[in-house]
Length: 175
Image (cartoon, rainbow, N blue to C red; front, side, top):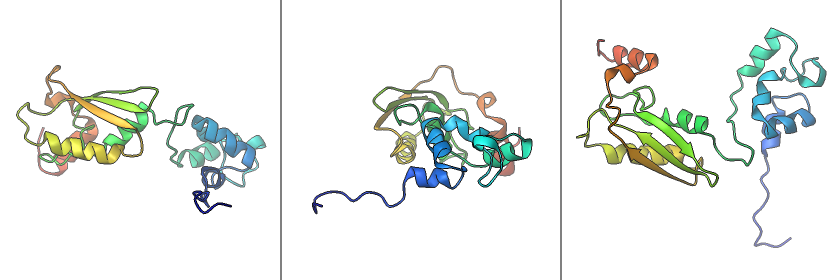
């Protein structure tokens, strides 16, 4: 073995999935199609082929969070949207998704992402901070990203999700 080769990882994705599914064959199926994870019973269950046949097995399996990837191993728009929940508007202290600032997400075949977003006001002085936070949360998910800032439709408080309203109420804003 050459010293210039990068060593293989000691813990693989297959190893991680094997902790949640009954056998290697089913683990390989879940890796190739993550949506199957919700149909798999817990490890050690007696369900045939690892497929859940009762409500309890399905609910136990659905507690496992898997990041869905597309057929060629890239992040999906849903993955990006979930990651954007970590980008916090510095003025309000609520994430940009629940504030309704994310209007669209596009990903091309090469892993480049375009986010269509707005701000609560066009004069927001913290645009660079939001772009830096976005870069941090998208690192490793996409090869490149760009934010297209738009002003139409104009953002309004009606765009805040129910979760965002609850968060704002908790810090003293009244709707």
